[in-house]
Image (cartoon, rainbow, N blue to C red; front, side, top):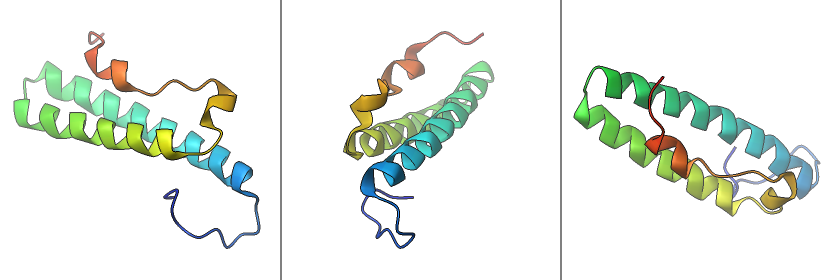
Length: 84
């Protein structure tokens, strides 16, 4: 899935990027949910590592060419949202 991996399926770079963006968005939602759960049970260490995971996902999203075409916003602010 990485943006630097070779594309052996014959898809164009833009098609591959859209698929990668969808996968990264789903991953970011899962990590954000896990962070909320860790915050609810006050696991400071887990919150720290999940924040780092969200930062890494943001970097991957920003590295995808034409990611702005879909008006996609990185998940940087998601970590600061209040839990439900």
